[in-house]
Length: 99
Image 1 (spheres, rainbow, N blue to C red):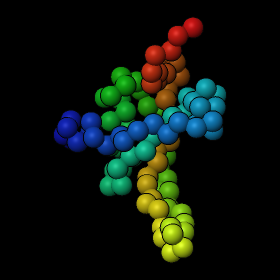
Image 2: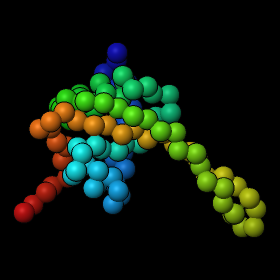
Image 3: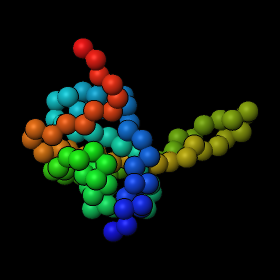
Image 4: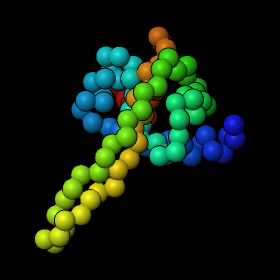
């Protein structure tokens, strides 16, 4: 597998109250990923980028919501999310944590 492709698979971490609690409690982190990725590629990408061991990966295709834009019905873009569970003792730090 090409390392350049692995470096572009993860778009961003999904930061929310729910994902933060899940990360603290179960070592499960949520990422937005490219639409054409599979679980094996996501696992290799996380292990390469964050130098951790991945226990499991679950993926979810988030369908875009229907919204009204200036009185006309439209649809927001959908995306793919990956729930990555790490092995015991592994942890990911996304920014400067002071304290």
